[in-house]
Length: 223
Image (tube, rainbow, N blue to C red):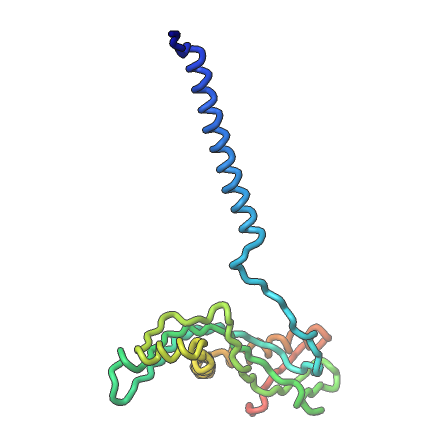
């Protein structure tokens, strides 16, 4: 009876084969993971596809501008709007929203209403007197990138109502309130006074460049 013995060389060869099998399996696993990741990224089954089916922009009208943009004021306001129920606590029914509204208000002088007597020139054409209307304020232009809801608290009923409606709360009221407050701040500021001063400087420089040595700029409400 003969017994087979494993020689050291055979043991070493078997170990090498096992290591080769393990390395091959590891490389195959890595390739599968990388390939799966690339395929998932490329296919992106859970991703969203954005399709823009908007109609071409239609030019409705063109209006000639006859005003001078004299100054611009940048404003920011924090709107704190709270709505409470009459007989229920805020945890049940009620909302409170903090909204940051940021935008600009333009001050301009309208030249379209100037009559023929708005500019008076001396006989030697060295002096000129101009009468202009006061500056006006344009409607606030809120910047959507800098206007946002900072914080919001909602009662239980409001959360359930928003969930069932499938749409978040309307922010138009917040934007309108922010525009109103910015308008009030612009009226109370020196924005129009700055615009009047800039308009005077612009008109004075323009007429002097035309050869007038003395230029007087007055507004229609001045004597």
